[in-house]
Image (cartoon, rainbow, N blue to C red; front, side, top):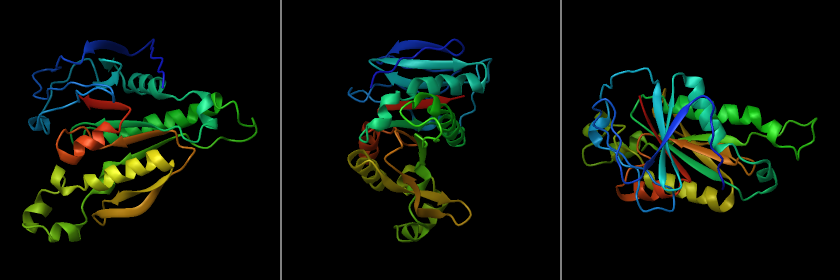
Length: 253
């Protein structure tokens, strides 16, 4: 996919993938690469929960393009949203291509607003899509082209935590990488890539368990934004999950 990236509002900077980026003494060190490069985005486990000094920049989003890091900066959240939408808005021709799927992996610290970003970007893409999808009858509203899959749906069930060696610790530390089922997430994304549609689970925070088959990704969905804390980890199955993304975003504030 060719991506034309330009913005008249939000700023962006290109950095070689061999460099790391730090901000305001933030212990998160990271590098990022496109899907076909061996280098992967990584960050230290100590970055979670760290207080980061605020500045005039609201936050940054890093994403891969060719062999450079794109650091997107904005003084307001709308600038960031608009820039990300321009980055991944699909061309009109994809409406006629049933096999087109573009995967975005959005990671970041817990509670940082990943879900808000993912859903807002998807919402704006879907709102603008009718203007792009000229192949549709002007009197017919084209189907949504972007959708979000949350990593939360791939939590281990409470019953699965009960079956672990130390269930008390498992429940107390629920949300750690080992309390998820990355193999199931990997299978879901691979099936989506091959078949073009899939049912994915969501998560019921009231009940505290995943909800099976709650999200239907169909052939008309071309932009798939997967959001979660650990999508870009380099350990075990998580590394395989990360390799499936066409673009990898990590944001910090």
